[in-house]
Image 1 (cartoon, rainbow, N blue to C red):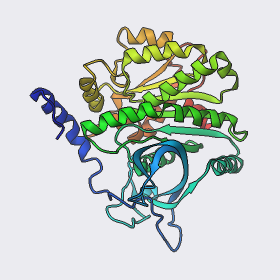
Image 2 (image 1 turned 30 degrees about the vertical axis):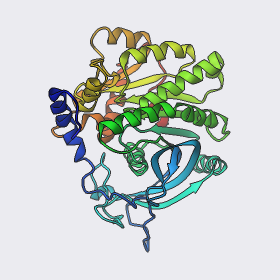
Image 3 (image 1 turned 60 degrees about the vertical axis):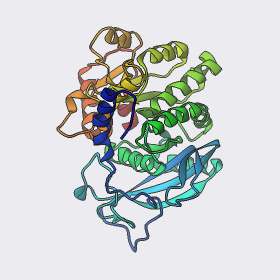
Image 4 (image 1 turned 90 degrees about the horizontal axis):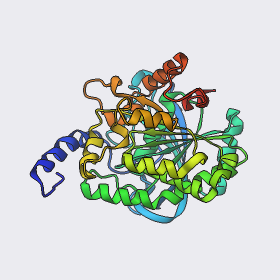
Length: 375
């Protein structure tokens, strides 16, 4: 249990964290990313390639983890192919973790291939994927708090598969401890600060790859802090010249664990060089309610009411397109992961809104990111 000096807060933290503790129950603690040997491909299974860029240290204790939660000053790279079981044997929106290893590709997420690569091979792999698919659209995913490397890889593979959006998936995974403890939360927050320049370097590198035509960023929870800080830094360094050469088309902020006052300041500092932003909120997000308590009861961006003052006026002024996922709630779901667990419904909701012209901002707003990615 997380302990505090205040009994009331200790009870609140216990209540909020308890449901989260059970979310990974039954999954193996080690060895997940060791490739599973199989005689032949499983009929109906899908192979999703993930290219990972990270400032984590290589794992010295678990070859199936590849990278640990410790920090590294240098960027490292990996290519992982995730096998997702046939749609008929799984529930969309969920990662079917094997309960023991090796997993069964017929019903479990398994690892078909996993290799360490270097930056030149990353560029070559992205170029080959762009040539094969006929497009150069890259989706960069920045995960949140409490994610091991294998957590992030499998979750991103699930998002790519279930959304059905044709992209080249590039995972930016930063040194999260992958633990649900208050001490781990503060470590992760400092790791997020530590990772701002690394994400900026990745975005700059993608701008320079000839095979890449467009870049989209999808950030979740604490990963939004890294994304926003990287954008802020890019705007400061490059100024208005950035918008002329940047391939970044949209930044999708999902359940952002970011102080609303800090967000206002970040937006102001980005100025006109910032890309369009789409915000996904859930007003019943228990994880962000916990974060709000930890950070002195200041609202978090991911659980605001976008129709209430002053948020509606500010979001409209800043031309931020907002999607309130609260109405997608179902009994027992996790509001903090709702956008990923109900990704099909979320995509449908976005398309419905765009078809009706129901956008928060004006007619100059670029087409929504998921629509553009699907083209």
